[in-house]
Length: 560
Image (tube, rainbow, N blue to C red; front, side, top):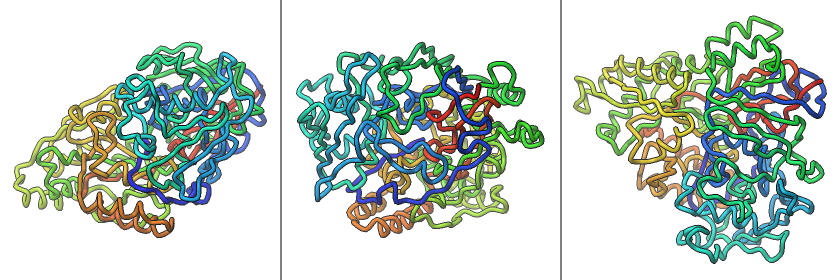
């Protein structure tokens, strides 16, 4: 899950925003004590990676891996708690220097930054990397460059337009200048996204770059077999002297993909052999929570991180009968949120969500427009609304879920809770490596989607506009899975974007979130936490707020 946005942005600088903290057994150096350099870290993942190409990488789990391979102009700090929500310099010497009107932003690259073949990273490599994001062949990434760069609406990317985008200037090898079509006060946060990673033009292989992006980070790709395994080895030309974020401690990182989640839990509970040097990529499964909490030796290896993510069920408002607000409200009443949380591990997985914005975001207003006892759903109220909408005899819908054990369990929870209101739900399971690409295709998305959103930096400006502005619906790479298009909401988004007072904008976004909730294009069910198991030899483990509370891979090491 990730965020996007529309309109003139005058949001608070990320570093000034207070966000929920992360904690757990693995804070600081982790439960294993001080880390040593060397060894092989194993990451056990129950899902595949969506994309590694920085132009297409816009899912938090894949971004977490991408941060090991490539660097961006700025990035999130490597820290637990609120400190992890700060944007810090990465390839750049600072977080950017805006002009007085915030329409021109200048960055200077650090000296000595290099690609995996030893060549210097230049401003032209950053420029080319950004220009690639305009190519129709690479539609899945965040839209900030396309939205904000002057001339971006007509630019077709470097494969069709060899002249490049004139609004990105490279006066010398270490200076890059972005000229925007509007004031953007937090552009220094936007350039933390993978789309602002350097790509050398002679290494660009188009859509095939997804399997072998060229490294500017501490690791390069040794081998990659999608759905099976990604092996990262040291980039010997990466220098920790130029990188205050990544520790680069293990010699090798092996990420096993598409494993059975229950098997991952069993392996890490036992922690035998190489699994003592392993971490889970995803939170512990619901069946394993009890055994983990009951065993003190294992419990101390459970790292819990907070997030700013909201999980929700998207309702495709372009599909009948979901174009009727009464049907959508019926689903909002019927949904058993507690069952969905149980499917994700119970209370350890987070708090039941009743609003779009998690409480940690500025402007969030706690409310519950569709209440039910214990969050377990109100089928009687749902049936009344369905009858008013002409569906007293029920209806049938199709739900898109990831083809994982967790996706299946959540799908069955939706299926069971809506059945109590007379709504039959068919489950359509989609490969985890193609899930967001598929539901982001408006012609392939079905009626309902197991969904969620993590702002790109703490604030509603990277949440509400890009998920609910109907003008941003695109045939591919679409993030508005509800396909919700309200002229009133679109107009309010524009009005908030013109506000120059960050606190006033935050308050206005909170009010807008309540307005959207009453339309029920989505049904929030969980404000995430992530409880992740680590092996006893792993150090530096903490949940990172930007990656839905899951482990920050760049800080992990091994105790000898």
